[in-house]
Length: 258
Image (cartoon, rainbow, N blue to C red; front, side, top):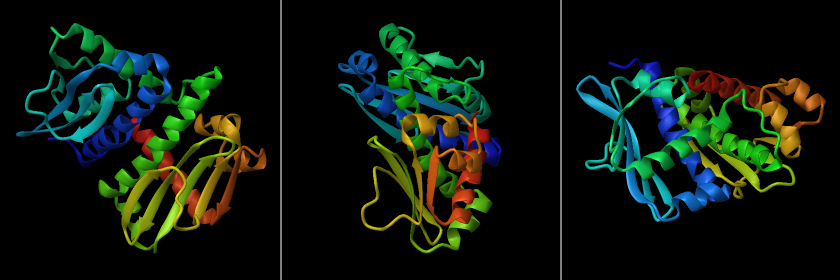
């Protein structure tokens, strides 16, 4: 049986990492073209005692939806003997899954290319081209806001205590001069992540990155938040204490999935 930490880590991968594949398919022309005619279901599943943990990618003519659970008849299945092995593979470690659907070689090759594209999120990947830098920042901000919500929903005790004491509050992240923004909504222990700028309420904390080049050193952990503010890479508007809390939870999540 998987540990609670393994299950929480799998939740972050399946519910926060997988959805940013949509950014790759929409923002990378080569990948968008590669999947434009694909209609298929690709399962990722791991054994956990008598059951399975997993999610599958549902491609419909290039459109992608992430569906939690087990698909009864996937075109390709990446199977793992344990939840930890699935987590390790998704974190970039050398784990070889059991693959069903080898005869659909074209789809399999496309899937490997999509999975490899997620490596841009690794902390040691430092893109230099402008489009790659923008892609990394956008994917990271989308993923981390979703991961914060899933970290709470997955039952982390400290995150649950932190959210339970709060009225409705918005934690906003955005990049100046770019249409890149996402938020975490907290209300009495419940959380919800969204993309874009939240319109109905002023942010309780707003982390504003100074363009792509300002965001990159922070995302790459080359500077801490104090240095980032001092160097004007980042402007934190609102409660500094709660901004630090968000930063601490972000670091915990990063340590779990890398």
